[in-house]
Amino acid sequence: MRSSLRTGMTLIVTLLLFLAFNLVWIGKLPDLRWDFSEQRSHTLTPAAQRLLTILEDPLDLYYFNSNNDPKRSYAVQRYSKRIEDLLKEYEETANGMINLHLVEPAPFSEDAYKARLSGLQDNAGFLGLIGTRAGHGVRRIAAFSLDQKPLLEYEISHLLYKLQQPKRPVVALLSGLAMSESAGRLLQDLRQEFDLVNLESTAASIPAPIQTLMVVHPQEVSERTLYGIEQFVLRGGRLMVFIDPLSEQRPNRPGNTRLNELLAAWGIQMPADKVVVDNLYTPRETLGKPNQVRLNLPRQAMNTHDISAWNLNRVTVSSTGALFRLGKSRTTFSPLLQSSEQSVLLDANSLKSTTTMDSIIEEASNQERRHVIAARIEGPSYSVFPDGIQGQLRISEHCDRPF
View (cartoon, rainbow, N blue to C red):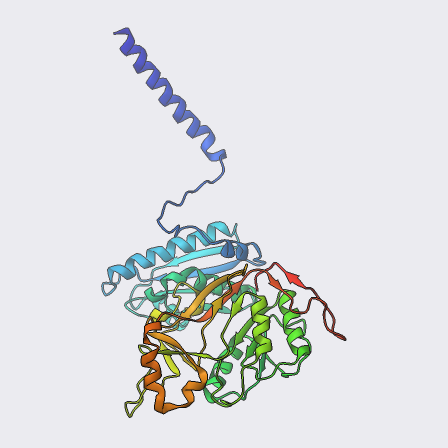
């Protein structure tokens, strides 16, 4: 009997001590949170956290969510809650630099009118975001889409970045060919987001204000230009390279082997005489004859978890080669676009003879496999010119930052 009383008194005292600790000390403990979700969906990535540390002025975010719209599906309803939780995480992590306003616009209400006036889309109710910064205008996400769910954090971070950095980044274009009409449309879209600068194909250096350089299928790159591109990367610049093993405008001219040497120093290789032919993604022409060198790549050919596939449903490529990561490379090789498993690599010269095309493809059918068409390369980069070149300023021969 006494043992039972003693045990009961011990439990009561323990409970009282626990309650006293919570009442007195819980308010003094730091705000600790755990994310037990399967994909850590309530934890911001390091990149998003770094973005929040550079916010200079307070930002206001208005999340319009027609939560009770009867036309909304259950999947969208769950996604709207996911968006709200992530926005709250942004607000919490920003340490007072983000003020989140949750708005539930009823039909025909003043809030619904404001949402529509601000450019938000009413798709079975509103599910959009408006961001404001005093004296710097307004940015918006017209409608969150389930198709873009893997890139939700990027969408929000992109909006915050545009609010924080109203000055557009500078992008330079170095091209060896005249731009076609379709490329002209691409350049027009680029000019909406960036300050686009055209460089001569003989440029010996890349000016300092340029943050990203696009090199588009240069036929001939001089040693001075190649060195300028390399030094731009080694000092931390971002490089986008578009190269093909076969030029449809100049089919008898060989590819630029010097540029391939530069890529090899960074751990990547594209065979200069091989073209990807894909039986699954080859479009059928009006007369029923396929265009073997052109590929229409659908969503399943893309890395949909990468921001490069944001808002893309199809990518058309022509005369494309295959990219390979070299065995001793220290760089990270992340495929962005890939062919189907019904694709082969063919000699570029064989494509000029249409009479033997079918037989060539049939002979190569036992070599079918997926091929990487576009990739992101990150990691240490090295110089092809360790001794520099005469008359050119040398910045570095090695860079450990991702490029």
